[in-house]
Amino acid sequence: MSSQIVSLDSLTVSPSPRRGGCASSSCGASSRPADIDPATWERIKDHPCYSEEAHHYFARMHVAVAPACNIQCNYCNRKYDCSNESRPGVVSERLTPEEAVRKVVAVAAAVPELSVLGIAGPGDALHDWKNTRATFDAVRKVVPDIKFCLSTNGLALPDHVDEIAEMAIDHVTITINAVDPEIGARIYPWIFFDHKRRTGIEAATILLERQMRGLEMLTARGILVKINSVMIPGINDDHLPEVNRAVRARGAFLHNVMPLISDPAHGTHFGLTGQRGPTPTELKALQDRLDGGAKLMRHCRQCRADAIGLLGEDRGQEFNLDRLPETVTYDPAPRQAYRAFVAAERGDRGAARDDALRRIGAVADDVRLLVAVATKGGARVNEHFGHAREFQIYEAGSKGITLVGHRKVDAYCMGGFGEDATLGPTISALDGIDTVLCAKVGDCPRDALQAAGITVTDAHAYDYIETAVGKVYAERFGRAAAVA
View 1 (cartoon, one colour):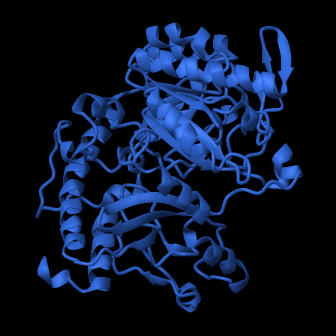
View 2 (cartoon, helix red, strand yellow; view 1 turned 120 degrees about the vertical axis):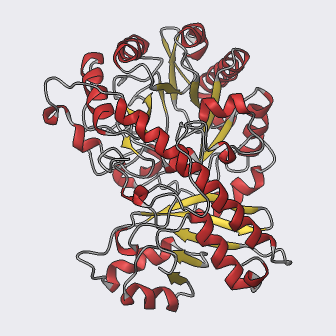
């Protein structure tokens, strides 16, 4: 396959001849989780938000055609023209449906990884339903093989479920932070419903009732629903297990518990009043408590409302309207070829994962290892430590090798040289991590990490992540020879 089709640097490593790749789009079946039926897998296998496995390979695109909102959240401030912020509700430019179609065609032509078009505001996709519907209808005519999804606070959801189903939008995300109106009233100062602004318990009661009803209506029609919940320490953190039970009972496919972003510089009510967000350890502890309930999403990046690219990267500035050609010819062939490439990678990676799990299984003791991975995508260890803006966190133990989250960090490395003053925040972000895997690392960060009790290695550069984690686990706990 031509390298110009595959734009991910990480996918330049061909499938191993020892395992043998495949060139068929039917390959990669071994990557299907055991708890997902084949029909559902076909619906999610290329959706980077609904499938943890897919997020290594496939990109999403959000178009900011829905600026208005019908509720106010204490964690939200929809500032515009702030390209350096990565959080929900932020965009650099608002689009008309016509402008959105032009941008989608340009991105689809340039980014073969693109598989999903989402509308996530920056307000509410359903409150601005006219723009949302017009955008989806127009895009379907020119890029018919792209999946559609939308995000909503749920207030207007019951009014649009029939249209959503008719339009074959089969992925919907609802943000549900509480199922108790008293807790909801501490999160939502007001809603606008039935031509009237409502506040307090009344507002929260209406919102929560309509969220639950909308969820039930969607799942009754076979639409896959992801629930987003913002973890707010001291307000809803102890309540979120109840939210998890409630949405699971109503058929939610995924539950995504996200940390509150509360930097005062963002100008949100919570940020300005000192409400803190959870630490990575607190977030993981809550997610661990929820295991066994509704299936959890742990790979969310809390994307901007105009995000483009793989999760964890944002190429939006490359596709601002003033940079786009007036006309773009869309050719589906590169995207089709890329999917065939990914199918081969999935088959190869599945065999590699089986090898890694055998290494884990050879260790008799139930010991766990937290590993931070620097990766550009492609499910490989392929990023320089000093260039990493985030690390994916994997836990290895008796349950296998599982992605359990990510840690964002500030870039400190310029031209290959690290600075002690800026390395500190990176080490702080890696608190509790046992080992860091990367493609390359300099002496300065290696020494600093070692002093902090963290092992870093580039010995497994360009391996599949599971392969590298499995080797490190077996080497650490002494049974590698049994399965070599």
